[in-house]
Structure formats: structure tokens, C-alpha cells
Length: 126
Image (cartoon, rainbow, N blue to C red):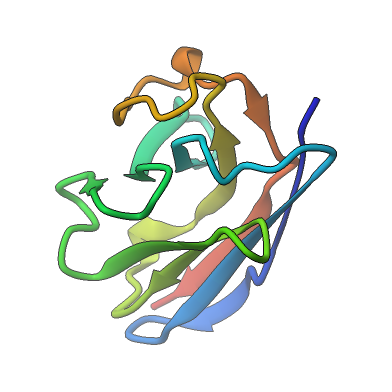
């Protein structure tokens, strides 16, 4: 069983940056792909970014490509999401997710991830 706890959210102005963290406990995540998703009020959960177990490959939603960067520190059992040039449309609850397939490839559907954090609120004002 994996427990995921996100942190780093907040209220910022458009154009600002935030760095989200996702700390895992209960089991090492070093062998598993990880991802970030977000959900805005009244909208479905959407994929943001994913990273392979070793950080060798990443994949981003078109809406965040070039602005967001996903990374991981397996020694710290933590995944990060660096968000730059934030826009009001980035406002959402951001959640990290852990796959349960060791050394698996990247996936973008929420139903394909086994473990989830509770989320952290990111609000971007215009």
C-alpha cells in the first residue's frame, strides 16, 4: 500500500510559479511510473504529466507543455511538479498518482493509476 501526500499549492498571480511535491510512504515508488492530474470545479479530472520510474521519459498534456516540468527523486520517494507561467485556467486541485506496474510505461487515464493523494489546491488569479 502506498500513501501519497501532496504539498506546495497556494494562491498566486498569473505568471507566477509554484512547485508541488508528492511524498510517498508505505512503499518505495522508485520502480513505478508516477503522474500528476488536476480537477477544476465542475470539470472532469484531467491528465497533466507523467514520468517513468527512472525519470528517463516524461509526457505532458498539451495545455502545460513548455510551462510545467515533472521530476522525481527516488532517494526521497518524492515526485515534483514545477509549474511556471501559471494561468488562471490552471486553477484546480492537483493530485499525484502512482502506477502499480513496476517499470511500466507512461499512461494518461486516471483509471490506470492505483494510488492517489488527497490533492493540493492551486489557484491562479488574473
